[in-house]
Structures are given as C-alpha cells and as structure tokens.
Amino acid sequence: MYSVEVPSFRNREDGRDLFKELRDKGFQTPRSWDELAGIKSGKVFAVPYPVDTPLPAERGDLLARASLKGIELLDQNKTVSL
Image (cartoon, rainbow, N blue to C red; front, side, top):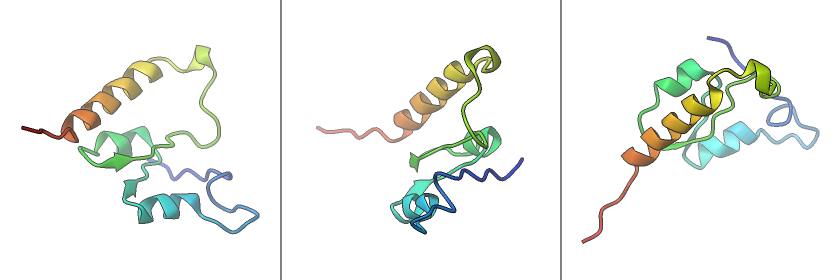
C-alpha cells in the first residue's frame, strides 16, 4: 500500500486540504484500491491513483472494479420505507 499525494486536493495554494474537509463531512477517503476494498459501508471519496487515472490501454478492469464497489456500497446504504 502507498500513500497518495494528490496535489489538487492537498498542498493547495489556498491552503485547503480537501481530503480533510471531506473526512470532516463524514466521507472515507481511501487512497489505494486495497484501502477501498476494506470499506464496507458509508460515504466514500476514493482517489486510488497518485496523479491521474491511467490511460484506457493501461486501466485493465478499472471500470468493472469501480462499478462493482460502487454497487456494493450503495447496496449497504439503501433505506427501506414502508
């Protein structure tokens, strides 16, 4: 596992740490696919790559993994109304 330093979210010219602001609002902010895999419920803002998302030819099954994880999390967060 590695720690991702995303310049547009941290070390900003305006001094804001957007990851901290998201955590303060109740979001989990995993920075790797391994961290994301361990999250089972709740609000999530994931940035699993250090800079940009890889080019399409390098992504492999990124769309499938991200979609399945999103469905898993949404399924845990659903509400029932009678």
